[in-house]
Image 1 (cartoon, rainbow, N blue to C red):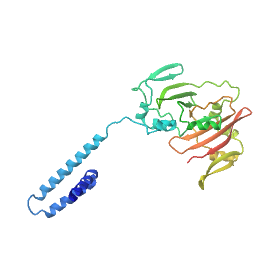
Image 2: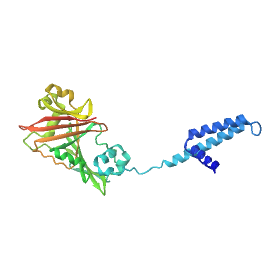
Image 3: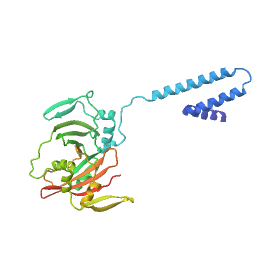
Image 4: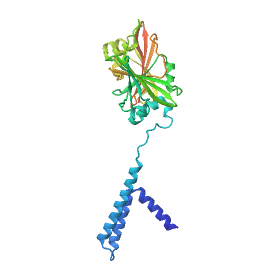
Amino acid sequence: MLKKKKMDIFALIFSKIPEMRILIVLIVLFGCMCACGGGKNKSEITEAVVVEVDSTITMEDSVSDDEWIDEEPELPEKADESFDDFLYNFLVDSQLQITRIVFPLPYYTDDHKDSITNETWEYDQIFSGLESYAVLFDRQSDMELEKDTSQVSIKIDRRDMKSHRLKRYYFERIKGEWMLEAIDDAVISSADSESEDFFSFYERFVNDSLFQTERVVDPLPFVTIDPDDEFHVLETTLEKGQWFAFQPTLSKDVLAHIYYGQRLSENSSTRIMEFKGVGNGFYNVLYFQRRNGLWKLIKFEDLGD
C-alpha cells in the first residue's frame, strides 16, 4: 500500500510539473549510466529515455492545446448590476462588446438612418483618446444616481467641441443584461436660452486661459488629499495665481459624459462636473455657478489617487 501511494504521488508530480519531470528523468538516466555494467549499453539507454521524455512532453502539449477551446466571452458575475462595471468590460473586451449589441444596430446620422450588422461593426472604445470622462449634474443629490442598480436606460454622449457634433450611445438593460441598442450622430443645435449656454462656456473655458482666469472665483475653495496622510482631506483655498498650478488636465477637443437618468436644465444656475479617469485613478469635481448670467468656477475638488 505504501509503495502504491508513493507511485501515485510520483505520477502526480511527473504529470503536473514538466520541469521536475525532466529533472527526474535526467537523474534516472545518470544513475543508469553509472550503474550499468552489462545488458544495454549507454547509448541505448540514453535513446530510450529521450524518446520517453519527448513522447511525454508531446502528449502534455496536445492536452494543453485541447484545453484552449474558444469560449463565449462572459462578464464577471453580477457585473450587469452596475452599469460602470459593465461599461468597463464593454470597452476593453472587443469580443464581449459584439455580444452586447442589438444587431442590426440603428445608426442615425442627422436625419438619415442606417443599420450596422454584426459583420460590419467596428470595435468602438467610445472614450478613445481621452484620459477622463465626465458626469454632469444640476444638483449634488443627483450624484447618487450613479449607484442606482435599478436603472434600465443610460446614455453616453461624445461631444466634439471642434466639429460641433454629438455622438450619443443608447444603452438598455434587456433581460438583465446591458445592451447597446442605438447610436445617434448629429450636429449640435444652438441653445435657445438668452442666458449663457453651459457647453458653449465650457468649450471656451478649457481652450482660452485668459477667459478661464476671468471665470474662476478668487479665492477658489479647494479640497484635496493631505499629502502627509492619504486618509485625511484638506479644505483650503487657491489664490488667483495658484489655479494654473493645480488645475486638472482636461480635453480641449472632446467632452464625453454619461447620463444616469439625471436631468440637466438649461435654466439651472448650478452645474457639477465629475471627472473620472479612463484606466487611471484620476478623480476631480468642478462646481460651476451662474452669476449675473455668467458661468463661473466656484469650487474645485481633487481627490484622485
